Length: 120
Image 1 (cartoon, one colour):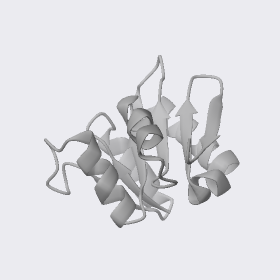
Image 2 (cartoon, helix red, strand yellow; image 1 turned 30 degrees about the vertical axis):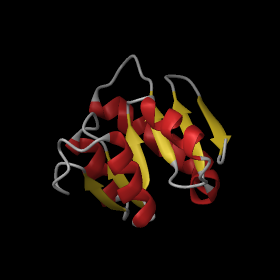
Image 3 (cartoon, rainbow, N blue to C red; image 1 turned 90 degrees about the horizontal axis):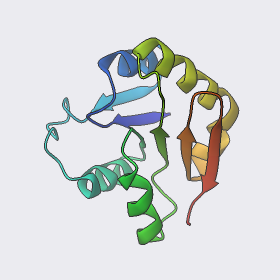
């Protein structure tokens, strides 16, 4: 899978995904440190990447667009330490990879994650 990590996502999460064999880029590395959310969505769609973010606005952008891509993983964790985020991310990938490939918004919380298929 291919991922694009938003500014709120740690470099640790990027490295974690890379170690699992995923093509993962941080917006900072892509020269998009100050990019608008809609620009990040466009880049992810054009490159068939899944957005990793802590920003709820991405769900709103996709709902308004009516598009079925890109998929977005939104973290809503109380414990945002990289080790916890990576643990939750591994669980999401294990259980929801097919949904992410099809087009979905996955909201990740401490004890569960919810999947909404796109378009909304």
